[in-house]
Image 1: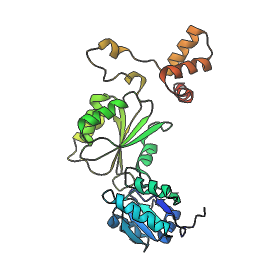
Image 2 (image 1 turned 120 degrees about the horizontal axis):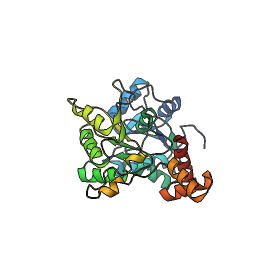
Image 3 (image 1 turned 90 degrees about the vertical axis):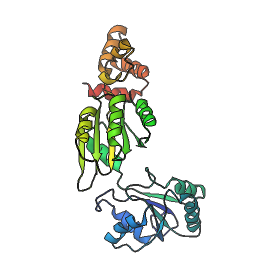
Image 4 (image 1 turned 45 degrees about the vertical axis):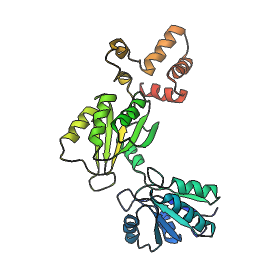
Length: 295
């Protein structure tokens, strides 16, 4: 389809996550040309529109009215209107309202057009210093301790960077649980107020970062929590203390295991790597990347 915003469609417009300059020229054009902008909070979006002198009509679309509002907006688009969907910050649908409207628009054959923009978790990831070759974003950690600990247990031996959002008033509790479930030595990064005036990255072992935050009067701002993948020596952190033998069984690195198989089974490196990948339940390419990092 044409890129003209005047055409009836749902435009998913990425907006700044802090710095108002972090918006694309295309996003500004679309916001000016659509018939209506559906906002998570019209007051918040109005600050952006005023900054760029955009006079487009706005309407409220949030988690409490999206069931009924989605149907109204799709009806408008079916009748020829063009609608831009924005949230308070970042891309619509990423831990924000939007899914119901997007799904309903697709079901009614209304074109859905993404207008890429900032995303807090992606900005935090690339500046974290943690591996970016394989990662998983899981939205907000559960607020209840038991559920949060279960979520952390599920990623204890993860071979990829894990990314979560967390509320500032819960971040210390979350780090206490990380130390308990993943161990104080697990490497992590706290990205706070990314792109804003008080942007901060705290990088280090979980125990160190926890002590840093505990020493503060309060922790404020938007927070992205990034947990490094399980190091080979950390693979069994958190094993039941009643089973000391099990906790001492540390899985060798990919490099050591490949060398071991090559020596014991007289295989070449490629064949040995294939066996290691199968043993660990990962793809050959992921095992290969780990092998390269150890060289």
